[in-house]
Image (cartoon, rainbow over the protein chains, first blue to last red):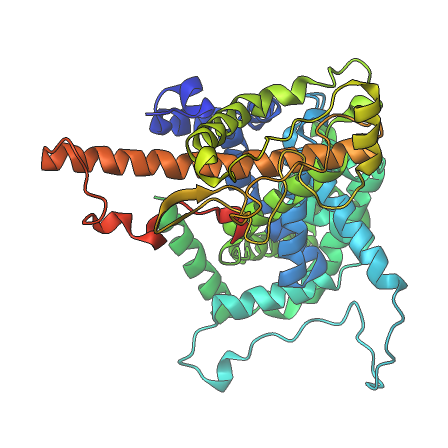
Length: 229
Length: 257
């Protein structure tokens, strides 16, 4: 039997997987730098969901979000040797993703806009339409519908506030890490997150008093906890 | 403390980023301000909503990533590999080591076949052409070489592959019986020009893959025959009665298909 390079490094494939799963991101990327492809697969497994989630909430287009998430992961592989452990690996990855998203949004904004025939343009502060459970009391609010509303609300936060907001709320990056990713000053990061939170709260305010929605939220959370267990 | 300041502190407090002194001030404000307490509650529900509605990955994400990565790596290899032109610290011939062994094995297999089959294919009295030596011949070969898609070690014929027909293994590079061997028109050396040399390298790699395919197919065939011998216990093979000696079942050049 011919063993691959990865298998030689860590014994059997199963042992290799266990070994890689125990490593920090920063150690895995060193293995990638040494040409170990399985370490890259492990990093992909850890980050693909987070990246897709972050990018989708930025660009609001699932196809484009998938494309940019893949582009980010490909750049991680191609430029692995450029990573130095002066920053956390997650900071480096999200810096790549943020730059890609910004470039894409800049390209979009350069395109000529179509003039809307709707005489009442959307107000950024206008709350998003909540689901109407009274229309069918037996119908529970589906998770997909809730996701759509959250995506709609998130997309209405201006981009300059949205990036630090999502990096904090979704990716749980620290203020210092967000500072590294965005290149903003620490005080600016704090104030932008605060402003984004206020806007987000105003956008979803009608939903926050909706008992059915809160019950559905608790159900989703309990299902997620069961899945984890 | 004003509510605006309290909400700014609240945001930082949610992120565990508020110093103890400011935390005390905030707590005192919250004790007296019902609106800010509601605001804090709203922010927490907002966080829970975001966490609960994390989007799911599209199907086949890994598979598509693999495809895209392979494509990117291929493109990168075709355009920017071998930085020896700019970087003199890199051994410009080191890349030959990676596929030299496999190429040698493939060439050995082809030459072995040619040794057995060549005399049958060669017209009587025909002399094997030998490439000229010396500067004049070399210059002539270089002058005759251009960037067209010609292979360096052999000439691609119309059916360019090694096929097995009813009379056994016979044709190399798809040449007809009347012209069984054709002198290579290209050179396998280096022109010193980066673009041409990269093209030569690409052709050599193509050849390497092709020869590896052929070698693999012959090895597989030998193993099958060996198994057949072992199972039948006979010392001889009657190819006429062996269903695996069907003309269409012989090794084929996958690169040519």
